[in-house]
Image (tube, rainbow, N blue to C red; front, top):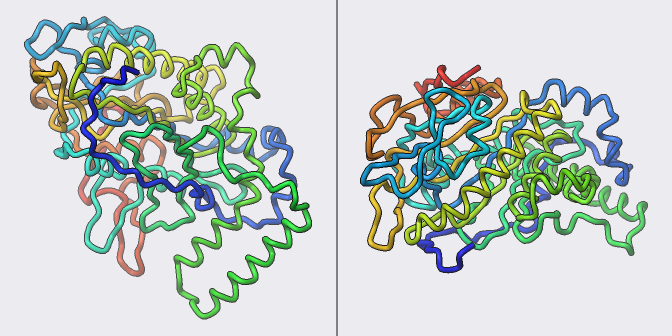
Amino acid sequence: MNSKSSFCGSFDHQVSRRGFLGAAAATGVGLFSDMTRLDALAESAVASDLKKNQKRVILLWLAGGASQLETWDPKPGTPTGGPFRAIQTAVAGTHISELMPQMAKRMKDTCIIRSLNTRNGDHGGGAKLMNRGRMDESGVKYPDLGAVIAREMGRADSKVPDYVTFYTQTEGRISGDPGFLGSRYAPMELTTSMKPENIKKLDGIDELDHQQRADLREFLAKRFAQGRPNSAIVGSHNEAYQRVRGLMASEKLFDITQEPANIREKYGKSQFGEQCLIARRLVEAGVPFVRVARAWWDSHGQNFETHQEMVPELDHVMATLIDDLKERGLLQDTLVITLAEFGRTPSINASLGRDHFASAWSCSLTGAGIKGGACYGKTDANGNKVVEGEVNAAKLFATIYSALGINPHKNYHIGARPVPLVDAGTEVIKEVLA
């Protein structure tokens, strides 16, 4: 990446390096006595059932805001279009940027939404909105998409995490947030390495000692909870800790050397490519939600140089991921999303960059529950505004939930208060659903 590429500097550095303890589904410690046989997962009846029925999500988070004009909604030959051509895709009448030739060939599996108007051009606020589908209210901290998918699709008998998020860049970091769902649905966050930290049992602790420590923690937790019988927070933390031994067994899933050399070569040696390969390994093992974040799209300066470098990488890795999922029979049950906090301005600034723009931008959906080849919504000739099929954050999230078989109109509850999964009255985009 060009070290001179501009970034506006508005980002969140909060990191939870031990957050994996919160990535949990409730299950007893005793179920996970074998911490060495990861391949047993592939042979189990549970894994077979997961592969047949469980939906999964891989979110490719384009941190900083990728340009829709250099990806999904090009405007060549216009004052705002920039230097790149539009190319015909495998779907008649649908064109995307020439920087994405591989995805152009795979457009029959992919849906483009070109009409997002999310009205929040701030990095922090936009990232929260596009990870949750709405903003927090007074007294209500909403869960993000990963936490909701973990709750809806995580399994108590699974040995793998429910929610994993990769982000090892320094810019634009956003932490996973389970909101009012509690620590039970917090992510395993990988912020400094592609492998979980603090997941191995120390060499000086034998198996009996490890079990006794877990038993002691459980005993103390039960004593603590006795005087707090209605505490959801206490219960959520206890469920998280009960899952630790299962998480320890999942270490090999993060090791790409377990993959054949030809598969590793297909994804490439970039960090983004390797993280997407791990994401495929994780969803194949039954992890419901994986977010892979790729940073430095915030191109206030040198927009075209930035995208000329980064879009081909996205194109190659995304196409490889889709092919890999399809060949393994996983794409029909796995939803691959490209999303960011916003897009980029059609206008080009004095630094030959594009600034924050949340009024008319794009995302893509591929796989589970989605009508491949669909292209929904339309922007005007210069990309300044949505002229057909406007989509806000709530409508996008309702559509994502529907594609996964989740009723977007269901209620969660905070005490006796019902909290709808998406804003009341929100409709799904029926035209993009299979």
